[in-house]
Image (cartoon, rainbow, N blue to C red; front, top):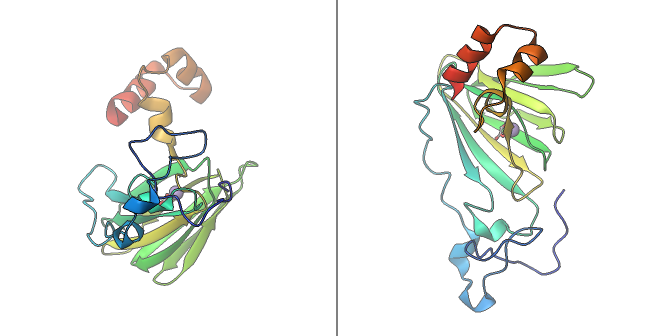
Length: 194
Ligand code: GLV
Ligand code: MN
């Protein structure tokens, strides 16, 4: 989905001033083999958190050689029962493959149709661009997946945080009306998710 590149590569200078579409290039004289290889996926992520998930980003911010190349990856580790909570990527379609364990993967269309399947090792999924999706570990042990995106920086809108953990907070008047519930429910969600 990102723009096509106009040169072989443009390793990002992350300290440079970002332009409309990505980062300026580091001078070619400073580029070496090390720029094109990334070791950030070698370690299991720490899933000791409320969702039991850890997403390790392999996007342009972590791996600057991806700048202008229109793709990126994540490593996603799941504790037993862990969930990568409902979210969407405004700038990319996502594909993923389960490397270990058993994941229920689901997404919802703009017409509110829910598609889902339980996947095991070696199975692949696709999430059309911008649609809300999740993965939850429904196996007995840990699970591991790798995902890939047709953007160097797909962005993630995590719906629970987008609604209940903003700074400043969205007024309860909006959320009670939108969800048709009382203030106490909204306050509980805000306090649990903030
Ligand atoms: C999984 O949904 C991911 O965004 O890596
Ligand atoms: Mn995703």
